[in-house]
Amino acid sequence: MNSEVLLNGLFALLGAGIGGGASIWATRIQLKKQDEQNKINDKKNEQLAKDAKEEKRVLTKNIIETFLINEINDNLEKILWLEPSLIEGYGSQSHKSVMTGFKYESHEFEQVKLKLMEITTVETLTVIKIYQMFYMLQNTQIDSSLSRFNEKEFNYIVEAYKLADDFVFTYFEKKLKHYGN
Image 1: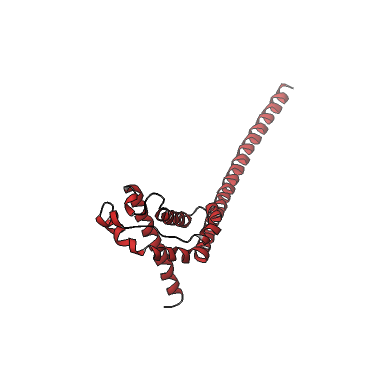
Image 2 (image 1 turned 90 degrees about the vertical axis):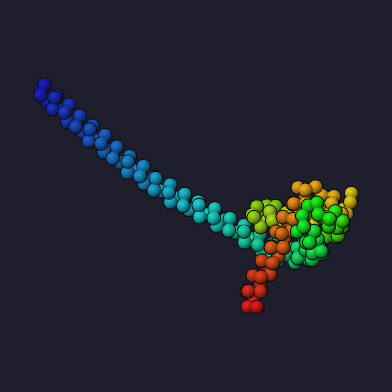
């Protein structure tokens, strides 16, 4: 009987060892499968995020090209005469004497600005910066000369002007290439 108990105990121990090993092995396989599934899900989420970002970029581009590019171009043409003073820089003689009062157009911008605020892209921020420059140049409540701006404001205007000029030039250059001219 003693040997029978010992034998039963040995088989029980052997069964527990095999069961425990099988359990560990099965757990490792399950963890490996879960890790692989997580990697697949991460790649899918990454692609979804890229797709959403691209969709925002395309939407912004369409809004700008459909509604705003001509308005920006028209406003730039109204302030083209400021360019030499902006190039000369802050504190130049023309900076002190050039007048900035003009009426910029913002009808199209007003129609789409809320939609643009929902879409944060580089293009959106560029457009907002450009219209902020137009507003600053138009606002002549205190003084209508370029000298009313401090150096920081003046540099902001110069930067926004260059952005607007590049923005419009790039758009129309692409359009010309698209139509084969």
